[in-house]
Length: 243
Ligand code: 6PG
Image (cartoon, rainbow, N blue to C red):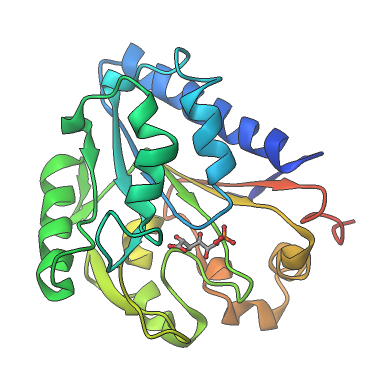
């Protein structure tokens, strides 16, 4: 299935597009009597989305039917400013009426060797599976300036094909340990949505969209859902090189 590129005027409008996609899918799942399993990424880009989900969409989404997991997390305590879980709780989850039992954080403060197994087993027990891999209804991904996604960095593309549900990664510059879903787990999702904004990433998006050979060094270019849908939600700055 061809990737769907959705271009919006501003980052906020792109975030609203993502929020609408979450609402649409969560409502369908509820109507079907099934939980909605969403995995979110961290970094700065989704902060505008978290604020929209906390305020504009607070009453539009059946949160009691939504289960939140993480694509990746830095191996730091939740209280750290670097924590993806901590940020999502501060900006969004603390402001909506969602049961704590619906929130499935990567516990960044635990030993990575322990947490990578615990979190993978937790997901496999909680979600529908394809073989041993949990199948998310929607996975939200970002993309770094180097083309990484989740915590799969250009110098660790083996994590794209790791047979684990999730793996321990290492930031190539800081050496910070991270827990990340593997590429195989990500590609099992029913839908994968990249949310990327800003002019700095426009050349990456152009190369990925044009499928040029050098784009294959970017993990974000290697995300190809097995059976699901791949969508991009980008602002016009990130899209400015696309024809
Ligand atoms: C993380 C994210 C990572 C992020 C990209 C983009 O833990 O940092 O999961 O994959 O999505 O680095 O980050 P920005 O949105 O801050 O550019």
